[in-house]
Amino acid sequence: MFRRTFWFTAGAAAGVWATTKVNRKIKQLTPESLAAQAADKAIETGHKLKDFALDVREGMVRREAELGGALGLDAPVDPELPVQRHFAVEAARPAPHAKRAGSAKNRPARRTLPSNSNNRNEDH
Image (tube, rainbow, N blue to C red):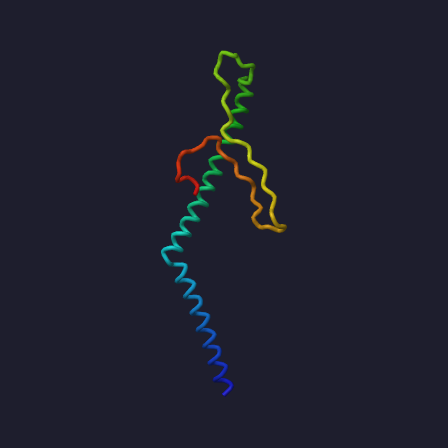
């Protein structure tokens, strides 16, 4: 009698566990859930590409400054010449302080481009 009760309980627990796993997977595969996951990945990838582009631009500005110094292009500017170019990347803003101690989202501040885009589809 004890064996039957044990196996009945084990079978019922396995059934509940399997049903829970299947229901979770079904919810993950709904069109709304898949669309949300794809959107999150696209935004994350966009931020990574933007950070890469900013790093490349920062390196370009640094290298241009090195080459300008080596070639003597940092000499006094003639007032009749056009205004000197501005740097392509603005400095990063200081990171905001965490609101609660031990926060796992302490990320470095993002650098921004100096231009204002009129594209409404950018970084939503």
